[in-house]
Each structure stands twice: as C-alpha cells, then as structure tokens.
Length: 257
Length: 341
Image (cartoon, rainbow over all chains, first blue to last red; front, side, top):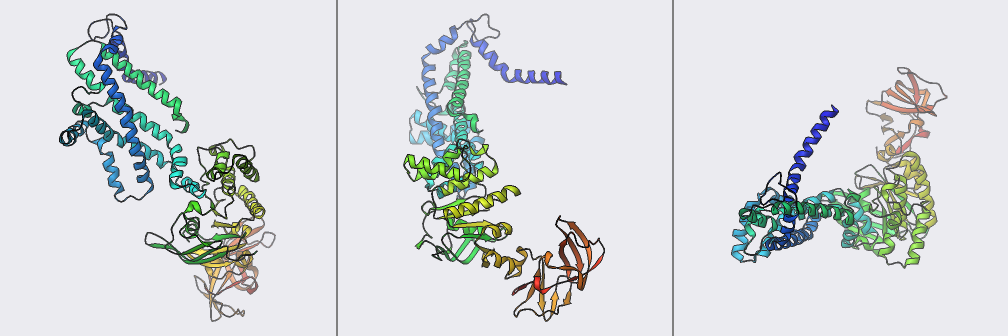
C-alpha cells in the first residue's frame, strides 16, 4: 500500500512539475532551436532574453498592469465586498452576481466586447484600454476573496470599537482592515498573477507599440523558434515564486491563515 | 442612592423591519445601581440593551442619560460601555492594546495611558498577560479582558450582554462575585442582560423581568423571587406548579380539585415551588411517575388529578418508589398568590 502511494505521489508530482522542468532545461539549451532534450547546456538564451527590446518593453507594460490594475481593483473591490457583506444593499445579490460574471464569461468575449464597445467608440489610448480591461477582470477576484475574509470576521468587534469611541471609518481602518489583511494579500497575489498571465483580453486590447509580455512571447514565437522563450518562461516562473516569497515575508501571509 | 433617574427609558419602542421587539418600555435606573434585565430569549432584553448603547435606532420614545437626551447621539459619543456575550476582543491586538484602544482614541497622554491600562488589567487579575493575543487566552481570561477594556475608559454606564453564559459553571460563580466587587469598587451603573434567574438574583440590586417586549415585573430580587406577580414570572422563578383558582377550586391541566384555604382577594392563581409541596400527608393524592436523586433532596414527578406535579423533599425523609400512591398537601404558606395566571 505504501509503495503504491509513493508511486502515485511521484506521478502527480511529475504531472505538475514535469512541464516546468522541461521548460527550464529547454531554456538552458546551447542549441539554435527549441528542443528537448537540448544538445548541451548554456546561459546564452537567458542572456538573449534581456537583449530583446520588445521583451523589455512588454515586461514593463505587464508589470505596470499587474501591479496597477490589481491595486485599483482592490481599492474598488474591498469597499464593495464590505458593503455587500455588512449592509442590506438593495439588489445586493444581483450586484454580487454581476461582479462575479467576468470570472465565468470567457476572456475572449470580454476582450472583444471591451474592444468593440468601449475602446473603439471612445477612442481610448491602448494603455488605458488595457488598464481598464485588466481592472475589470480583477475586481471579481478582489471582491470574492475579500468577501471570504470578511465572512470570517465577527461584526461585533466593529461595534465594540465604536462603543469605545471609534468612528465608523476608524473602526474599519483600525479593526476590519488589519483582520482581512491576509485576504487582501491573497487577492493581490492572485490578481497580479492573473493579470500577468492574461492572454485573451490582452490580445484584443493590445495595440501598436503597447503589448503585454505573454502576447509579445506569442508573436515572438511565430517568427523565432529559438529557446529564448523557454528561458523567459523559466525566469517568469522564478519571478512569480519570488513575489509569493516576498509577500509572505513582508506581510506574513500565513500568520493569520 | 441619589438621582433616581440617572438613566431613563421613556416609552421606548424598538422594531426590526415591521415587527415590534420592544413596546413602549419605561424604565428608570439609579446612579450606581446594578439592574438585571431578565427574560427568555426573544423577550427584547438584548434589543433594549443595544438601543441604550446606540447600536440600534428606536422607532419611538426617548433615552435620557444623566439629564441629557441621548436618543439621537451616535454610539461612539455616548460613553456607554458594552461587554459582549462573545467578548468581541480585537483578534489582532494584544491584551494591552485591546485595553488601551479606547484610551488611545481619547488621546490620553502616554504616561497616564500606560498607568490606566495597567491598572485596569490588574483590576481584573490579568497582570502578566499584557502581551498575549486573545486567541492564547481561556474563555474566562478573554471575559476579563473584555471587562477591563470597557471599564478603563470610565463609561457613564456599563452594559453586559449575558457576559457569563459562555463560561463553565465554576468560572461563572467566580466571575459573578468578581463583577459584583468591581461594580462596588467603581460605583459604576450597570445593566446586566441575562436569561439566568440565579445570576440575576445573585448580582442585581433590582431585577426587571421582560416578556415579549414589555416589562412583566420589576423589583428587588427578594420581591421577584418570593412574590412573583404573574404566572410567567412565577415559572421563571422556579414555581413550577401553577394552577388557576376560581370559586374555591384549583384548576390544572388534567382537572380541578377543591381548595379550601382562604386566599387574598384578587388571587386568580396559586403557584408552588417543588420544595413548597408537602409530601406524606394532606388531602390530595398522587402517583409517583419518577424520582431523581439530587443529593440534598429527591425530586418526584407525581401524577395527580390536577395534572403532573413536581415535588422536592429532603433526601433523608421517607423515600417513595415509582408507582407508589402518596398523599400530599398544597400549603397556602408556601404558595405564591398570583393576580394573573
């Protein structure tokens, strides 16, 4: 029984981590084309990643979108979640459903709709369009995750703070916010990763000279079949890991969870 | 005690949605008094307390505290403390920070803040626990922190919502006397909400028995305990055997019997505690349905022509077995005469 369990565990780990290992090794190839196993190992394609100008620009766009859109989504989503949780908002359930819709509706439809009915008619700049699209996409995550945190928080601790002299806003910032911090951090990480890896919406909203990293990688691969994309993927995976570790260290994600 | 109307509720009406929870309640509380609001769940006692605290807006009536109408004063400006049933401690703060919270909001100067916070923590016996977070404390300790947090800001009135109901029996007794001691030391006016009559009797200067949003009876513990005004209060105070009285006949759920004793005028029902029923002699007979040994006493459940009757006798007396037919008496001396059944 135990050996069977170990074998199953190994298979699952292989399934989960296999592609990642393949990409990392392929990215360290010394060959001219993307191949596995690689003919030899070198860091030349890793170095190449930093030389490609379009990668650098797209990375900047993606970082800006990932951080900026997530922050805006949280600024909008946290009060929304609080209001939905604590007050009998008229039509609250409908609002909750609408807020969740972008998770269910395929990104490709969201992207097309935003392009056709928001960007083109209003003539918005590409960057602003991307920013709005990503923010809209991330609000559901913010609302959902923060709602879950709020649900676990007793309402009477706010009342206790108010009776001790705090204003409603004071009670929110001193009592509620510190206690839903882990939810906010989780929403931030998930939002950032979602935005950073977003393809369908970004595909429609990207424009001349402004594109996100995943889109840039797709178009790069159409013309160049070299291992630099694999090297870049491995670097991005490391970056994601770093974000989680830093968030954990700085904000103590596991302290309250 | 001076100032008979330190806090007064005047025709206070409270409603949830369309349904009235408290109906035109009038109540006057003296300064320094400990009042217990006693009643079963849903009687409006907690709602009344929340309205006094300002957590709920009245549908009608006034709340006057120390001569000032506070009906429309927001909760954070009332200077009324509330100890929640669930304690409601701030989970992300240490004991010290929980207690200091109200002082910091009042911008109390650092030295005085520290002195007052430590004094409050000491007064509930938690010196040495300042750095703990609430999660690392027992229920009783959390209760003490909640108390310290409320009294440190010297509220004009302290409300306690079933503060001992989440503690085990022994701790409850200990906290009960501690509450009483604190109240005497600080001279603070308290309103204590509970459904436990023993707690209300032991703690309160005055008990207000509530039923369905109204005051059923109000008075000193002895008065409520010995002279309940209605069948409702009587049952709440342990008069488990209540019978209607009309034209010299007692009426129970199963039938009626003649009752010869002369009762005070206006008496429409008589009620007995299990201890008040004399077993072994008397004009009535019952069959023993069950007996529970309680240590000092034995409690019998009797089947009688009035219906089931609960009687309690000292364990040292003659014991009866199930099925025995036992004579018993309903002495007027141990009965509570009730004006309403």
